[in-house]
Length: 385
Image (spheres, rainbow, N blue to C red):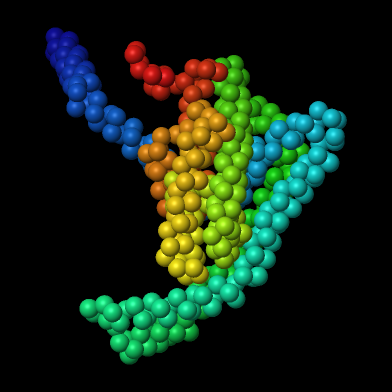
């Protein structure tokens, strides 16, 4: 009797413990199934995604000497992909075609750099003398202000500037500049090598990357790859065409107004046009400043008018034709992308931010099919696609 009673008590205790465990499990489950639990679950998911994204960005910044050259090589290879296909269709060997394209790209970049350097060196003396004359006029104008500065104050500021230039900080900055030049050369060599292999064996490399995928995942990866190459190539070619028209239009205006450094300023307009929204403004400010120093206020105002006119014509007529609506991003998206890219990688980040954003949006639009965006990006009933 005593043994049987002990067994029953033990079984009862086990049953009670099991019931208590089930009750606690249900209570814990209810904690994550109500409204507040759903919010907590989403918050945890967002935290995990943010941590992963921050880790990815940190890794890319640490390895920027490798990541940026590879990204630039991919952009150049995508831009010249039509040329690659044209050469392949005429049975030009892959290595020879890649070498010809690479030499053409390097000659193009070298020619632009030489053109800017030659123009600046040819007109720098004249602009320097005009700048000194303009500074003297500025000093005379300060004497007419209610709080005009005396000569002693200007001399003090000049001495402080000289002390800063000759200080150790500038020496440290020079050493940092040497390191930056070394990193630039390393990245340039790496980009040239990677670009050669992208031009030569791009499809082969992409097929190797797709080996782990199969079925629907393989089809999606192929769509993503095609969309990335097409978007990057179309964006860069369209932006380069628009930038060339801007540079020619503004350059002709600068020549007519007899503004010094018209050629390098036109080339600068071409380069800055790859930074949407901000680039044209910066180019206009620089052109107006040069015109102000060289020819006076009226010339500066006319330069601003030329820049505004050319940009309005380009934005309303030329850009929609060359870029198309498929690559058009909202101004807020462009502004946010520029801000993030500038914070992460400076001017180069600002240049790369918008094409990367365009690629991301292009991938979203083919995520579930060739013309079927991801489910969350599909327009609702009655909304414009």
